[in-house]
Length: 212
Image (tube, rainbow, N blue to C red; front, side):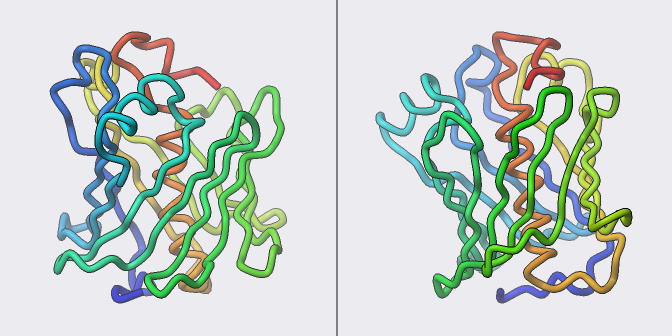
């Protein structure tokens, strides 16, 4: 990556608001990523454009295939997330600017929890996430019995929560020993969490806060 994440303790991922979401239409997902002082560090944006991309968002939601590109302040791509089409066990494959596989965020089977694994480039599970139904907005990244990172959705106001996809997430790196790749995967996981669990609110209102 062109930007190191090693010095970051907290980061905020804020989704851009699109007027069409007020009418129940899904638009390209775009995010601003800043540090704890509000300084812009990265931007992320879904790349599927045109009529087919629009129709795919409306019909298939978070099951669709798409790419999310991460850019620095000079608009250079620093990494790329690839989400293949899947009905079950959705995943996001994260690649560096030069095409190297960084790792994968993969949803796991569960009934009462939101569960997924963070897998490194060698196929090893390096972090596990299991968010119980009574903590629907908090996602702890565990290694064994220890929490190494956390992603938490922040309240963005009643109107935003009911009628739009304008979500905001706090990413916390609790373990200073996390590798650069692990930090990148946790950051990408925040966007993956948004797409899998908090997308599509225009028609469903508050019910969508507790779906999946």
